[in-house]
Image 1 (cartoon, rainbow, N blue to C red):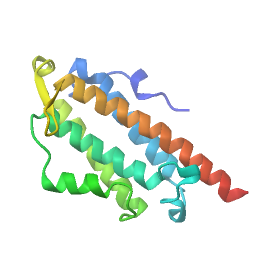
Image 2 (image 1 turned 30 degrees about the vertical axis):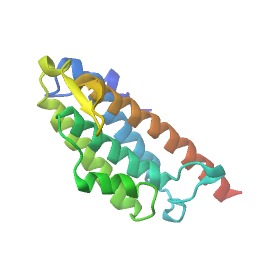
Image 3 (image 1 turned 180 degrees about the vertical axis):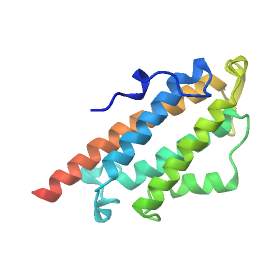
Length: 167
């Protein structure tokens, strides 16, 4: 097994306090792509035991990064982002399209991390229409941990579906 990103040293151009966020995003990016490499497209929207489908997890991984990083920039969600949120779980994309979107979103997140000042990390950021309280760091950390959570859920769902396929 390859060395995990958190044990590989600092990610270039990422502020020191945001290294754990970058490490988690890079780790999830690698694991998701490796996991889905030979996954059958026919199983993408299957929901074993009522669990969320692999397609949903891939949509949500991209969407949550986009939304949380938007809030970290002190911006509100656009109509397009709200439409994408409403479409999560609907079988409207192919596996390659979902992976391309996730890869692009991780790249975009890393670029944003590289331009985030450590001095801004404790600044207030309102979340959603209700402006629920958070901070830049709170949003970026939650984006990383939420990504890893869905990465784990995707892993289990894919393994269950692959096992069902072989039996």
